[in-house]
Amino acid sequence: GAGVSQTPSNKVTEKGKYVELRCDPISGHTALYWYRQSLGQGPEFLIYFQGTGAADDSGLPNDRFFAVRPEGSVSTLKIQRTERGDSAVYLCASSFDGSPKAGNTIYFGEGSWLTVV
Amino acid sequence: GNSVTQMEGPVTLSEEAFLTINCTYTATGYPSLFWYVQYPGEGLQLLLKATKADDKGSNKGFEATYRKETTSFHLEKGSVQVSDSAVYFCALAAGGSNYKLTFGKGTLLTVNP
Image 1 (tube, chains in turn brown, red):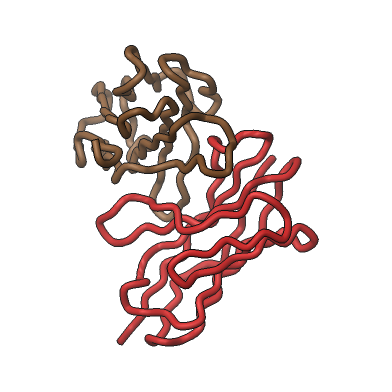
Image 2 (tube, chains in turn brown, red; image 1 turned 120 degrees about the vertical axis):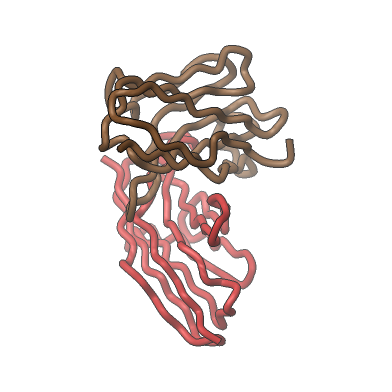
């Protein structure tokens, strides 16, 4: 696609429920990233995929958070037993690959706003 | 660990005023430095970047110079426009990777006509 696409754009869920957030990266991009942005803060790294595998999941806050990318394209971020503190904007991003080449730009989607009530 | 500190906003300027948004960082190794911008209702966009000391990144009239001696990457623009109103984020990637970005808290800029 033309850009990184995220769905849903907004999600309101009750505390304790399960949530899935979807990301469709730019076509041809092998690297995919998830970030979380709380109100008044900058984005915080959650997880990075290179192809199908999670190359770095050190930013996931606890075992309620999990992400997959089974075919190396679309990714799903899964949150179990949601808590009010999970309310944030979840940002997905992609780049051509994960290497630190000068021309390798990371492109962000518009985010999924999650509200846990 | 890595961290980015940027000036707190909000910043309100009149059109054609000079803009500076300060950014300083702490990092291991030799980080790459970035400014991202988020316009109302849109996703984060890369504004400019610099990958080594003394490099100057520039785009859309904005500039920032990578200053290793002061660990800074201040964003400047000589004459702002109403369309520059947005939230600006300073960020770094360190440790030999460009993927794990560490962001500042963001600075809201409002430019009035």
